[in-house]
Length: 216
Image 1: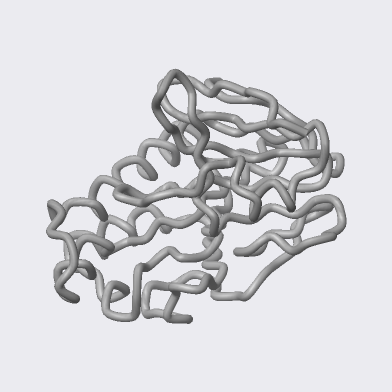
Image 2: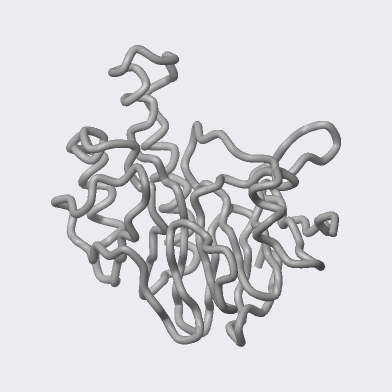
């Protein structure tokens, strides 16, 4: 499996090269910050004009992970939609998502961009526990061991380029943005360094997962 295996609060997890988190013992797949509809939202509000294929690109990546792993449950860690209007997916994308959701539990954790419950099925909740792990959108300072979150879109620089990355220490894991066209925050930014404990790793995504130490 193309990923970095690690233990968090007794749970054996894999930070996959795709940017998804896999908990094999529970057949649980976790992704964060899908930001469906970002290009459409930017165009609607007079921002940058991006090719309007970001949602389909994100769905294709998610489809690939689900096909490879066949999860029993999928947790989306917030900011799954870029705004309220973006939650009204075009029919082809709504049907694609419905197919991915069929036959498995699906949880939408609310994020700061999310409109709240939408007519796409699944469970909508602010945060949830599964075994020793706590799944939420934004990491909390001083959280107990087992926190899994997103929100920051962490990235790490290597060889002059930046790549989305996981941030992992003994207490928590912060996931990269899974969505296409999402920006990011360099992992050495003070906001992220203040959350991570000594010995933390950045696990870079891409063609293969690559773990590098964060500065203490």
